Length: 144
Image 1 (cartoon, rainbow, N blue to C red):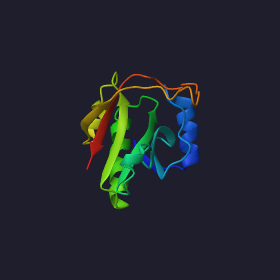
Image 2: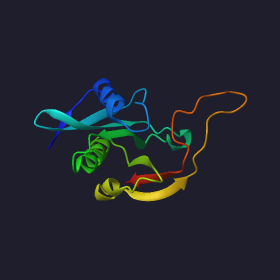
Image 3: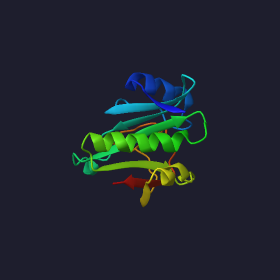
């Protein structure tokens, strides 16, 4: 398995086909992929943090990671994303997983659990929305 470059639009297409519970993000700062014999088996899309308070100019977020289940692809992509972020001058990389996901690949890539957030709906009377994402709690992971 090797790391390969990928455009954000091609990474978004891969996420749309593969990801279990989220659509592809609208954009990002960069994307990275891993391949086996020229076949893409996973992608990571890194962007600015979704939370406004985390947008300090020094923090990036893995907004989406998707693989076809290839062994070690997730941890390889998380680690590559962190190396790229450091090379670009970022001091911290964060991501979130559902509480039902173990985070084994994140631990293998050097991330630490730093907090938990409750799941919530964005649907409010003043701005009705259809929730297209799981509403369960999430775990915040960080590497610095």
